[in-house]
Length: 50
Image 1: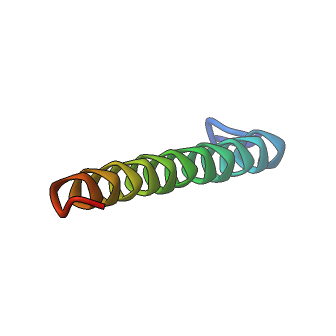
Image 2: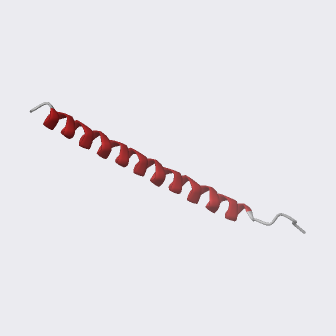
Image 3: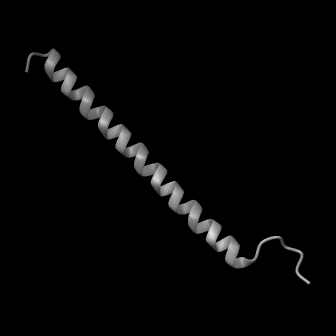
């Protein structure tokens, strides 16, 4: 009898889900960073008079 609480299929599914969540989180970080850079550069252009 196997005493492991998770089957190999469960572990594979968990690993895939973790990878997807990490990619989504990384995408959001990049999106927020890009949005911040665009907003800061547009404010800098307004301050410079251009």
